[in-house]
Amino acid sequence: MKAFRGTLFALVALLLVTGLWYAGQPEPAAVKPVTAKNQKKETGLPLFVFEKADMVKVEVKRTEGTIVLAERADGWWLEGENLRASKSMVNRVKHQLHDLVARATVIENPGEDALYGFGADAIHVTLHFRDGSSREFDAGDPNPSGVSFYIRPNPGDAVYTVKKSAVDYYALSLAEFRERRFATFDSKDVDQLEATLANGHHLKLQRSGDHEWELLAPRTFPANDSEVRSLLGRVSAAKAIQFIADDVKDLSAYGLDTPEARIAVRFSSRDPLTLLVGRPTGEIDGSYPTSYAMLEGEGSVYAIRNGLLEDYAAPVESLRLTRFARMEINDLTEVVATLDDHGKDKDLSHTVVIRQEANRWLWDDGVPVPGSTPSRVGIRASSIESEEFVAEEADDARYGFDRPLITVELKESTGRVRTLLVGKAAAPGKRPEGEPYDRYYARVRESPEVYIVDSGVLEVVKDLMREHNRKATADDEKAVRRERIEQNTGAAPAAGAPTNPEKAP
Image (cartoon, rainbow, N blue to C red):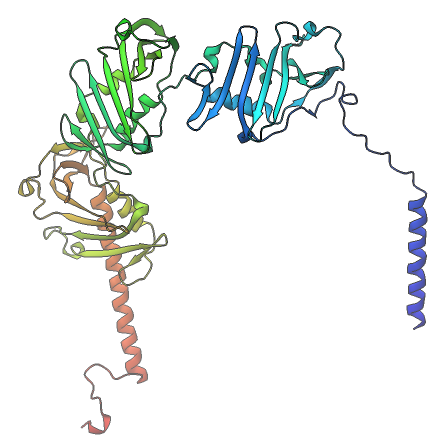
């Protein structure tokens, strides 16, 4: 008890000494609020703070006229001009100003505005926000160093410097505030693409699935999704190298009354878009010739690089589908593979079923399949790509599809099925170094087109058969061992033994 009281007294004495020490320390200086005055020649003073998505209008008043960029339901437009505003310019304003800070305070009350670019030629900018509020400032000249620009927020007289990129673009021409990519769209929303060239070449493509297209004219066959997206991309990426004229009535002056190309893009959720490409301008952009172009129904004429005409004039055969199984490995739920090696390897000639659940592959008895073989089979079969197109219609006996070497049935959770058939051997291929390799005729049962493929899918199916054989052998050995153990321990009667031991002889 005495020891406890001694410890308590010592603790109280320690607390008293500590309190006296803190009491004797000088009081910390009060933190001064940040103002323009005490920030002079220092960085970090916030000038504007807002959320980018809240800005809905930008007014730029200049001696040569006012430019107004305003948000509408279908994007940003130049008010009064009925022209689309540049997306990159709108994003530039938002990005540069939403958290703008001053590099330095130059002067609180300038005696002569013109020294900083705030005279008669000053550029006045007003930002409008979704809640009805606004922010204003004058964009001035570059400072003597050339790396910063003067700016004066309104209301107020103080002049600051900010980074050059924050305000240097407000003096650019009206053309820089216009959208140069005048035909943009989301290719995922496209249902149909149709193009007619002056030489009579005609293309018509129809979407038939998320990544599936059909060529409808001038012939009919499955089209390559990546090739179609490339054609769409050439239209969506069309860029005005030069703004030629607006509100044009006489299209013949630009060859747009009888265009070199008429490309119509139809959508599931918006009005169609039709690009007209007219005669060449006679000008070169870099190493590319340019042509006049416009969107049908709009009055603006542009100069664009005319390289897209070459893509649309390419032989239709270049559009043919090469990944002809049209399935995705991640969408597969079941693969049924059958090998019929026509007596050459009877041990591998049978059918194996594997299922994909929660990104795992299982044998048909629910046991996980070890290794990468199931994935390799799924990838090879679902994304099989042709090396050569053979025929529009299959002659099953000729190509060996009446008794295929391998059959791989691919199933999705939606119920969609594709059945890959690999038939007779085709003419061997030759690698770049001259070494030959095996090739086979192939098609999917659901489509008539015949292709030639390499032996990759055959090899992985054989690997799957070998792994299944090893599993079957291991399962048999386990069953035999279990039966012997049961016989030895009497846990269960051996096969053929009498069920009633009392009646045994």
